Length: 84
Length: 124
Image 1 (tube, rainbow over the protein chains, first blue to last red):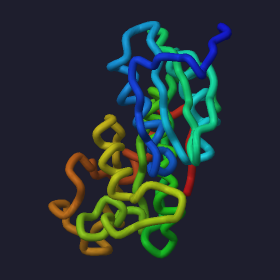
Image 2 (tube, rainbow over the protein chains, first blue to last red):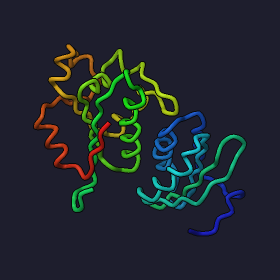
Image 3 (cartoon, chains in turn brown, orange):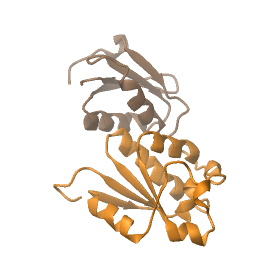
Image 4 (spheres, rainbow over the protein chains, first blue to last red):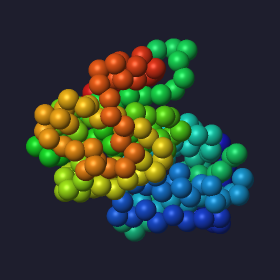
């Protein structure tokens, strides 16, 4: 995994999945990744604590790269690079 | 898991509004699998047939999960297959016209075929 300073990452797209319960954020990520250019970063906002565990598994399975998460105020910002 | 088979899973849904959590979980897992590009068939048996019955499925909620109506909608939209048990529908006098669009109907052999084609089967 490449070293990325998440605090300064400029996402190509941000998906606000706050308020969405399991597995909503995963579905939002799937829908959104297609509109991110290959090599670009998708940022997912979620206040479901399970999302930061699910997204890395999802990314690995579908061929993208999970690059980490940042804690926001009452939610988490999860970052994935589109790889294909 | 059976090695060598294409990735496809089958999920049996056998609960309805009497146990909302068990009713919703097949669709939670089913949607997650579709998001992960894994084909899924949900087999609706027993009270599970009510999970695709209009007028019923809109009213099933469980804490911590999206509403069933939303999950059924996205499952169909993402290409998931729904297979409802014909005798289970008939015994409850549920007409095909009252089912969510896209539901397929089947009897025992259809279910056996689905299971034989699957890499893994989950039961709820």
